[in-house]
Image (spheres, helix red, strand yellow):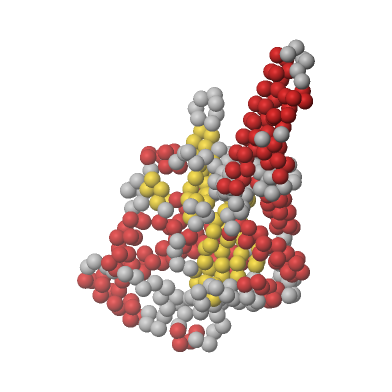
Length: 413
């Protein structure tokens, strides 16, 4: 009876709870993502047809960080991220997903969603954050002087600048201490984390092994953060999570992440260009302008706009070169962004199986039903093996003359 149950299980469960569905899902998911990778490679940044400066007006929007993600894909050129083809055939792309949100809403509609290279995004946003930091400390110095004479001078300067815009209304209770820490960072044993955003060597072994380590920007906390990691190659594509970059800094220095945190944890960046030297009264009728940081990342990004109600973007590019390409690619771009936001990749960029299986490093695990099926199949196989061994023993015991019909009657009834 056990043998009959095992055979029935082998035949009956193969088409229902398929224990190999994980592998099939993995291939389908990988094929889909590979297809989208190829299409993304074909997407081109829009270019102007003439020298006239025509820009999409996004001055009323805010730039909001959404996710950081590494994506590994097959390198069609065969170069990969190593020094030669034998090292790897995969290339690692580094992406930032961000939104342009209207200032009058909570970014649930009439927003644009974008995918841009991490280097381009960090180059623009970090430069903007550094500029804002400098202006904040300048304003702090001007308005929070410790002595009465300096304070009186600041009051006079404020009177002279009446009617002019200020980018910062500083809090003297906090800005003085903060700006002192920034000014004395190196003396206090800290280094600026943003100095290591670009991949650079931090260690080289003196022995014959010649091990070399590199530091560069990486995605952390499921893409919610950006930090500095240790990599094994000069392209900063092979991450080593077991190593800490601070162990390789000179003189035991520590990294200060205060400025870098403003990129992914700080307030959304207003895209409105504000001239601190402009007169409020005279500038009321002036047309609003988009600041440089928003314009740079917008022009460099792959765009998903129309499905989110952001019709002011792509529609404004009707007279641009590659406009048709942008419109044709938008659905693919939206799907690609959606796949990244749905955690289709792990921290290192490997594909993760979605649905009933899960993975943290590119592997997969079976669901409860699949585990039960595998256990039944294993027990069935063991039962068949035991029955075969018993039958073989009975045949050989009688010198090969055992009555097969009688021996099989009880077992197969």
